[in-house]
Length: 117
Image (cartoon, rainbow, N blue to C red; front, side, top):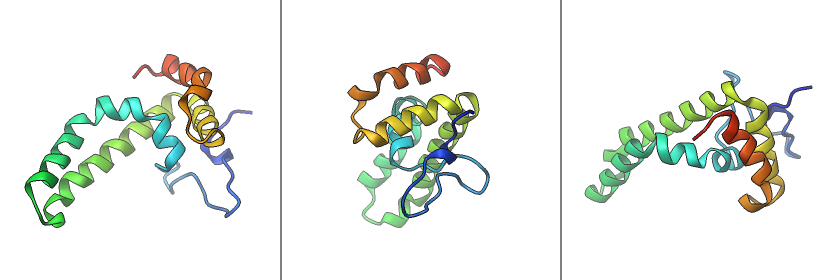
């Protein structure tokens, strides 16, 4: 049986999938995708932080913030489509090990071999 983020069960009954079937950007998935975000979302992130630096009104930065979220969601969907078992295994390992990357190097390598950052 293949793994999916659906198999990540939480005591409160929360789901790990959005209505469209993509993984929700929650802690372990965000940690598992951090290298991809750093590379693929750098421009959007830099624009957001520049906006925050230049504007005292948070409303001025809503669009740049939405661009960051859209980029993150796009990265997660792309990785999940290419390597769902590896993404889930890495996220589950991080979740079970307090997000300590050192304890999940095997799962990290498998994900990165499947979809290089």
